[in-house]
Image (cartoon, rainbow, N blue to C red; front, side):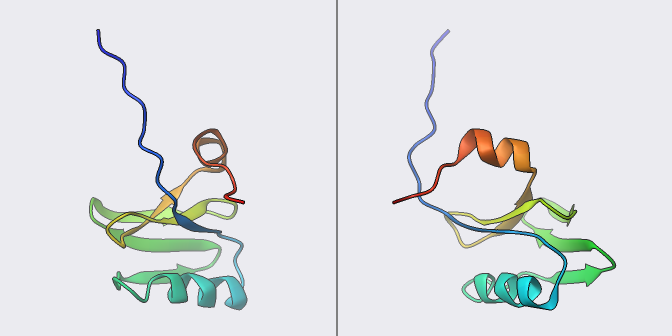
Length: 85
């Protein structure tokens, strides 16, 4: 069976920590391709290309290659991404 490697793509991401400052940063990240985002209690809801998704504290909010936003669990984020120097 053939093997595949994920193409190296640089993304923007913010870790969701429920606060007005963090929410404002995510709204700024959302400026290029606005998606509906809502903050209720500690949960952030994002209207993604696949439907409405919930981000809980500690999840990463990623801006994809087409400007879309979506949440990513911390363990998956850590296994998939590294800081660009």
